[in-house]
Image (cartoon, rainbow, N blue to C red; front, side, top):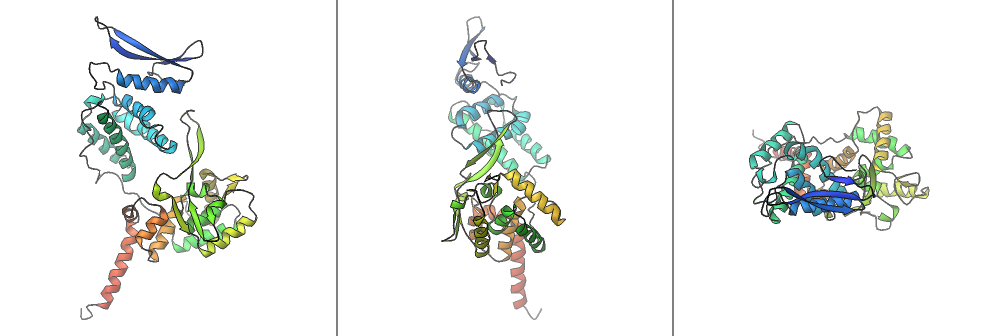
Length: 370
């Protein structure tokens, strides 16, 4: 459905019509251009293109608002160049964060001070460093595109620092005692294999949802992480969602994980009774993340433990690796992180404890006279 202010209407003949300001005559009156199509999305995309290349003022510089430019960037520039899950994430951040604060400002009038104030506002709302960084990256990328296409002279995001903005995300991991408690009950349940897999491999919930038996090489003891499953907002149906299975977002997420002996034994036993292509299933199909989350919630209730997110299991795996002196480079690859730095930044506290233990060990061997 069209939104107020879009200038898109449904005609009596069933087609959609879009109107844009094309130019002005000698008397200064607006001359409108028109777009027609059978589908709303088709007309909307063409209309966004026209609004960019037929600005209200003379010249090639875009005369619209930041909100209008972001619409063009989303629907024309990148929609067919990024994964659907990535696109919906961008659209959500623009709609919920950028447009309410900056959207009405003319693109040509946006200055560094506007963006700096915007970032400061985000930090006061207790968003994490990562969330603020993602929002800033989206904004900067869209403005870079404007510069590259001659619609903006310079990108006001250039030179702004994000180093001290946002709240550092607390990483929660289960203690060894809590892990054993969860494991003991999960082994007894028929529908909690996702919990066991995550604790044993550190795989993300979407990766586990998409995992098929054919992705596991039992002979060579390898788990191939090739896909991820997500439920995302449906861009064609407002208020609706849909499930998609695709490749992971980054190349580093495409990885091979060694299949440990105990997990191999557990999975082979489950495979004997499986009637699904998917390792973790629901009604013979994949079990999507919200189904897995529901199962985890019920499992936690049975243990009497404090509630936690599924991602905590991944953090627990990483913490156990650090406690057992797995080197950070290997851990980073197991987790599918884009860099070792990301692993170091994420698990700072756990790594600090190991460094402190190392220093205490060295200290006990030296300076006996003190």
